[in-house]
Amino acid sequence: MTVEDRFNEHYKEGSAPWDIGKPDFNLIQVVTATPIAPCKTLEIGCGTGDNAIWLSEENFTVLGVDASEIAIEKAREKAANANVICKYAVLNFSKSHVEEAPFAFAFDRGCFHTLDSASERQTFAKQVNRHLGENGLWLSLIGNADDELLNEGPPKRTAGDIVGAVEPYFEILSLVSSQFETHLPAPPRAWVCLMRKRKSGE
Image (cartoon, rainbow, N blue to C red; front, side, top):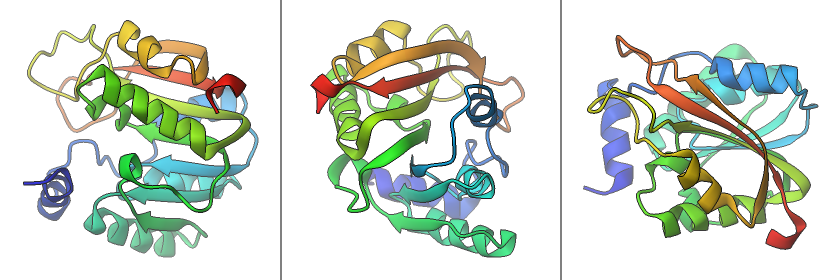
């Protein structure tokens, strides 16, 4: 079973623990507190679209991409019901170029941490860099290896895993320990990592 098939199964069965039916509070907090002004935005692994819809409601111009056709269908339906303009595309970001690039802001909630090897994570960071314009920002929510929930929750990465992957493509502006909102009894710990594109990484 491919990665795409596995995610489609989760969405078909309604068993995706990351699909919480609302925008992630970490995204809201970073965008409002930093602040990040409305801009052209790419959400990588947008799932059923709750974060993209919130960004659109905040006047961001958003394109959400996901490898799951079922997730994108649900995202388009949610956007229509919310009466917001939000573009979506079925696309495997790791293997594709998004034609609408460059973007000023990229967001992923749990994509970066699914990559098991250091080289895969570095390639992902380079791919995000390529899709951002000058001084573009990337916000990534990442499973935190300090989490004591060994067999539950998302894949877990150390701070060193993150730094090793994003250099030399990004300058880390903040790396903060938080938690994911999920349907699990105990919320998994998360890294909230905000980065700025380095010119040397182009």
